[in-house]
View 1: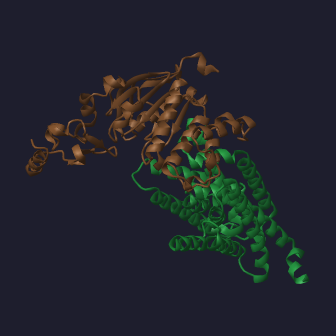
View 2: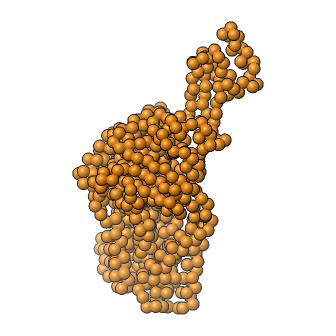
View 3: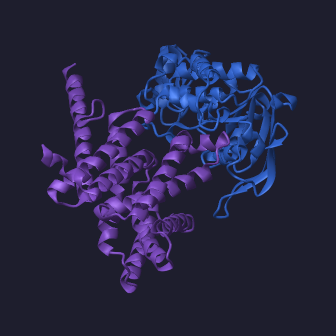
Length: 283
Length: 302
């Protein structure tokens, strides 16, 4: 019994568990918009595109999240510009722009050695998170939660029917940018926990899970956020016993929940679909 | 209300709209609509119908000319939520996790506070609009679980809830059953009585004279506009549609004198299906069917 409480005896574990839960929750809330807007690939792209920003911020002595955020926004704007000015399809544009940014980041990190560890950026290391980094993540999370909490209905309308949103006087260009900024900001925060490679899981899986479980958006937000927090906390906690990667644990756990929803969801699950087919053929 | 101080109108004054690639979508288009009208916007695909809609909603800025709504700019009209838009069914993501109530409530967003928390008044309006389109019983349904006609009515209710006095309907009768079509037409007539301006883009030529008092014919410009009986002529339609128009000439067909006035015309808004006396199937061309014509003439002893 006392064994189960061991992680809580270490300050770094307590911090890791709390931060993972917080980041998991914020990313999950946003993931509802990302999955419905069809921006999953964009989330993946931005999480890789922030890497050069991290390196440049270190060189300039700025907080890493500022550099990463700016790089993310620049990448998003770059994608928008290439898409509007070429005949390429969006996925090709995203592929070209984000790999360019990521490669640039790799180059900078190797050319100008710093105390930044490439491994940490790509795979995350929440166990070694420093207090200033915690502060940055806290600021990002609080601002994101506030903005999302106040404007989620406008963002929902923007995702659902942009033309209607515009026709009743909502500033859809601002909402588009707002969603991009939130995506970049949370990607930066999630970089700490799971690393650039797995950020997209935090930003997509909880939303995808919740989408299978409900037909109401407000409930989808609730389910996704609960999944995100629970997986974050539990994943970090379990990783202590497994002595494995925290990011890996969190994402594997999210996937397990997703698979359970995919199979067992009362209305949109595989089993439910099978039962319905069965009933239909029996009639 | 400011809206009632200036009379309601939609004035499209000599607008030219270009795509970003430089092609002209609409050139020198002009027409004016006044309060209390149902106007059909008729033209082939790619004739500039959606461009015109987008210009009226202010999504596209004309390179030349301007659109004025109730004497004001489109930007001002948008602020007062004057223009409501009912999208084509293909434009909507039907698997989105929202139900009928949520969608109609979206029509009220412009009237709500910063956080879009519905007041008692908003709920009352939504309920009233659902009642008006006969969808109250379905208010908790996810939108993907509705029939084509029901889907249409939900978005009509949203436009009503917005209290926009100018309504733009994009192809409202595609994928809709006859009962719903009649119900929608009934509703539009009532709105016309209340002084709304309703602009309906449609392919369904046959229904235009039934419920539209005005017509705008377009093909990259406004070819003609005005009262239906004056504008909806064979000459104008041929000009607007060119070779696309389906035709059935009685004098070329297998229909004969003895069919008299018993000829029945059925259509699914494409080519009409024509039946003569005794329910005989009639063909568009007599040529090559001389046998049939002879046989039928014998039947009645001609």
